[in-house]
Image (tube, rainbow over all chains, first blue to last red):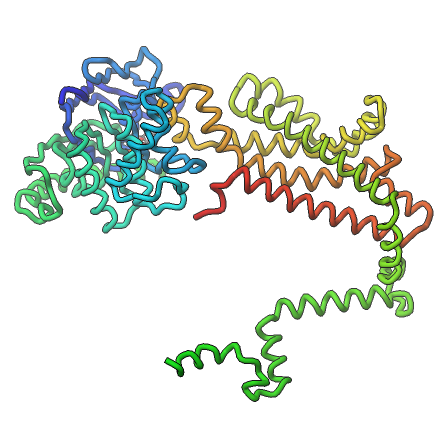
Length: 274
Length: 281
Ligand SMILES: Nc1ncnc2c1ncn2[C@@H]1O[C@H](COP(=O)(O)OP(=O)(O)O)[C@@H](O)[C@H]1O
Ligand SMILES: [Mg+2]
């Protein structure tokens, strides 16, 4: 696996610099190795989505740089440019509701001219079967359940064979049971299609279960508070959630996450009072 | 097994079969179909009041020809060529004005929503013209357009145009940014974005504009025909009033109402064809 090395150097992002000037990210330095699953945890509003949007090419940076395999994909100098080597699974889902599941999955490779419609369809059918969605290809996304939609969106990303898979709190809206099933689907898919993964969550347990590396962010402005390697071998199943090592890591990090969450909460209170 | 089958069929047995007195059966029916019964009773009461308004001296209603006369008049009118020609003319004007409103309004709306320059160029003009009721345009339309036919179609067009334009702008400028971003990541060019994102995402609003616009089209065609035309249902309605044919006035009103209802239903059908993904969970 030689694709998908992400590096962040002194990344800084200020929204609306002439107006209210919201400092969202400040001095973020991070390296993600090819094929590594990097889970980002932090209180809401700390700048996680901002960082993901910069990687995806939806936002420019105020300072610093982001590189993918040595190629600069975000700097203050260049305008933001998305690319099919970095595909996002959106926080609130962005399957096109006006098109069938199959169209949603195959539109990427077909628009890029990488596959014929027939090739893409064959490929799509295989992937759908892999995630337990055989027979759903001609349905509209809104005919599916929340968990099924998420699976389709992940398949839509994977079929483009991106260098990095960007997931923004993908399982947030799901119930606990569906969520745990989805986590196992994701890990299984990644065994077959290894990818560098940039995974945002506010759920520490989820981050530790899925991640090779967990990055804890401070409350806004987002800085890196702590980086932890999760030395629990993969493949993991849900039994590890109660293993001593898992509980140890969780105990060590939950204090940090909680402190930052409290800080974010108090900052929010102050802002409200002002 | 047999007892189960009997039990299951019991509720559908008629009251008489079960030995229940008929009056109890009626009471049960009224209870179950309360809305239907009340609705039917109101309608019957209304038609009776209308029919006997003159002998009873009901104010307002007694100025109108009773339903029996209206039925007789509709028989005469429906078998005359005048009526059907009028229908045909009005429908043609509706189709022309409505279609023009879509053909011109939708592209302008899409352009205004997706292009800031276009928006700021066109918006001031529309804001000045839009508050003017289309009916107020009738004199200008008569002067401006070479034929009365064109003037009438223009008024219909204008009525539908604003609502089509506003709905298209509204729909196209509130598209979730995630769709655009997702499409760009997946390799969309500008044409793909328009064809696969902007157009379908705006389609439900365009359909709303069509439905509302069709209703307004009928209002406009009637008003314009009364003033600026010598054919069509609006003209026939006014003409019937002028020659004091009261029953015929009512028939024309009902005909316009039915035509409006049918065209709304048709547009609703078209709308569902254009947005097959809508109306799901
Ligand atoms: N387009 C924007 N303009 C101004 N402020 C923004 C914008 N997007 C996000 N922000 C602000 O930047 C901060 C970080 O946002 P975000 O990255 O969405 O946080 P997270 O994903 O960690 O919850 C928040 O305070 C948010 O209000
Ligand atoms: Mg977020």
